[in-house]
Structures are given as structure tokens and as C-alpha cells.
Length: 152
Image (cartoon, rainbow, N blue to C red; front, top):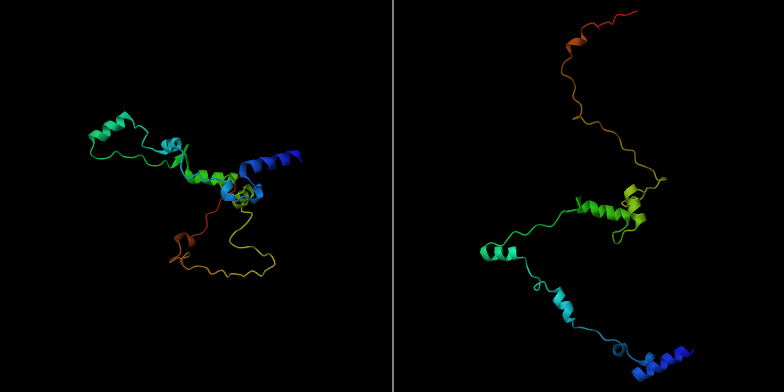
């Protein structure tokens, strides 16, 4: 109780009235200006380029080629890394259980299966393009079969 009373007295000293009656605009200050040190760190102009790059820029009329983005992280493609991270549940918005269910096929997201509903029986229609009738019989069909002699 005493610490609460002491806190109220300090608030009265600092703000002139009870803190409950003070507007939030007077209690808080929003800093719109950035710190100079942070601004200097954020600027890329202050970074000194390599000496070899300076020489090439002075002598060449055509700008140097920029290396492309790496498509692999430690030899693994970014898509595969994202998929593995998703399976581990480390992608924002995907939990480990959702990732495991999607991986193992436990939950089908497109439609739910109703085991008691009547399923439609689809009739099998053989395609004519997959089967061709033979045009003539083979010669061996008219010959007598070869007999295997018994070794005894």
C-alpha cells in the first residue's frame, strides 16, 4: 500500500495531477526524427568500394556485370529449403502439425471424404487408340508345336 501511495505522490510531482486524468498525448512522446548515428550506418554511400572496382569503373565505359542472386543455399535450392523449413514448422503461419499433415497426406484440403455418401460408379470405356487388331496371323501359328524330349 505504501509503495502505491509513494508512486501516486511521484506522479503528482511529475505531472501536476493524477495520472488517470492526464491525456495520453501528454504522457508519451513520438520521436519523428532519426538518430544521426543510425542514419549514417544505414547510408550505403559511406561504404568504401574496393580499389579494383574503382580502377575498373574509371577505365571502363560500360558498367561491370553484377553477379546474380544465388539460387542455392549451401548446394540446396531455395524452393527445397523453403519446403524443408515448412515441414519443420519454421515458416511463419504454418505449424508443425499442419506441415506434418500436409506432408503425410492426412488432411485433404480440397474436399472432405464422406464414407457414407453414395459414390458414383464410373463406367470403364476402353479406348480404341490403345488397342489395334492384328492384320494377319503369324506363320508359326499354322506349324505344329515343337516337342521337348524326355531325358530320363
